[in-house]
Amino acid sequence: MLIVEDDVRYAEWLRHHLDVLCPRASVSMLNLAEFERWCTTFSGRDCDLLMLVCRFGTSPEDPNSPGLSLLRRLRDQPAAPAVIAIAEDGNELVAVRALQLGALDYLPKKLLTPERLSTAVRVALRRVERRVQRRLASLAHIEHDRAAHAARSAAAGEAAGENRPAGRVGDTVAGVVPPGTVPPAPDAAPTSATEALQPPGVVALLTSAPNEDFIQGYTLRVKVGESEKAAVYLATSAARGHNVALKVSKTLRDEAAGRQFLEREYTAVQAIKSPLVVEIYDYGVHAGFEYLAMEYLPRGDLKARIARGVSERDSLQYLQRIAEALQVVHQAGLVHRDLKPPNVMLRENDAVALIDFGLARQIDGGTTSMQTGQTGVLRGSPYYMSPEQALGEQLDGRSDFYSLGIILYEMLTGQKPYTGGTALDVLQQHVSAPPPQLPEPLARYRPLLARLVAKARTERFASAAEIIAAAGELLASMAAEPQSSAA
Image (tube, rainbow, N blue to C red; front, side, top):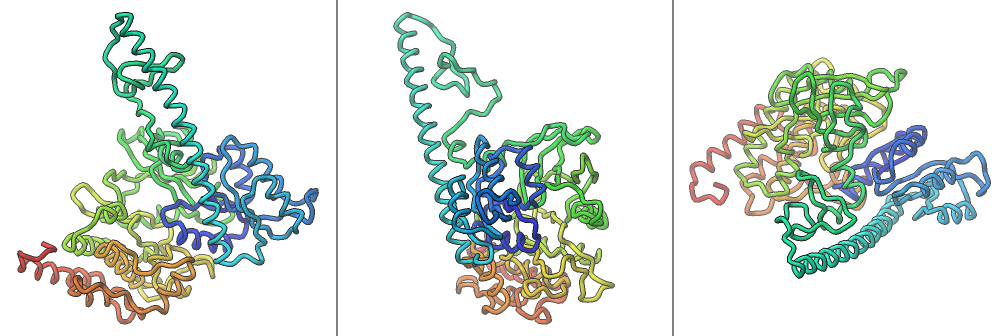
């Protein structure tokens, strides 16, 4: 998903709601100038759903409104995304014209509520799904025709006594390549129905990258991750001779804005030398885009591990390891502020490494205050945000402990404790709903969880060392119970 909006605070508001509505989606943000370049540089396959927030003018002929002209440009894209137009002005005539130009919905900005946004997004996603289904049906028809043609060719060859070489992986039908097609390379991945099921943006996420030599010294291989501000690529470093994870900003560096977010992340991580935090090799700016080169951890993140199911024992061990990582971060004078399963990477020995310090801030002189960014702009994931972070208050390390408690609940149950139709719903639960309660079979972990996710930070663990010790006691008691299901 892509949000196009010049007002950063409003874009953040939209992103928080989209994160809740579509937790598995990647949500990016661009201002109008950046979006103009996006239309020129990228294809529509880089985005499935676009939230276009801008002026649409007072009439379809208004020369000063960019909204309708942008819709015309998108209509000319080879694979245009679904568009929800959010108009800062406009009227019924403009709305009709926007819909004629391909917008799925037209919403006046001043009347947009979380409920209206939710309805518009759900309707748009159903339209996207139907579009994918139509494309699948077309692909299936083409594949059926090819297979039938290949079968006829094979039968004709056998009748004529022809001997064809044995097929290889990637051939359409047992050694037969239909006339008029180009055989795939021996190491090419075959096109599959599973791949065809992927929406255009998903396929782009898995396979696309800028020019492989886009950043000097690094050969980009494949995109492996994405956030609203940056894309992460598997790349080969010429200087190091091995693969690295290369994080590239999506927007041009603003020299007037002071330190940029990747520069802040680089500075934060450089202050921490520990295997519990991802190692960063290089930082630079190329063609106006920031980049970070860091170690590549192919085993994946805790989010994927939770999806496969985590035992009680493993949950406690991961809790200890993440607490150890937070201990290192806090001792370096930092608060992470965005602790969540996707930001906990796993090493081959099952150790953890924290990543994504773009929101990290210095603890001010070891006190409970924190240097903040833009006032009034919430940053972080609504699902893991502490009550004080949701309220925009100053933070300390105990805010990270709250996020860790939400992760523990998710590891033990496979579910998030607070959900809702909008980001605001989720944030309000963090602030005022009763603390999450584990079911009876997990009752032994309730005291530990309660001290992690207490609404008042004074009632939480005071240090990471206390968390490590409490988890260690539970692990020791489990070891004394060999018949325990957790063991």
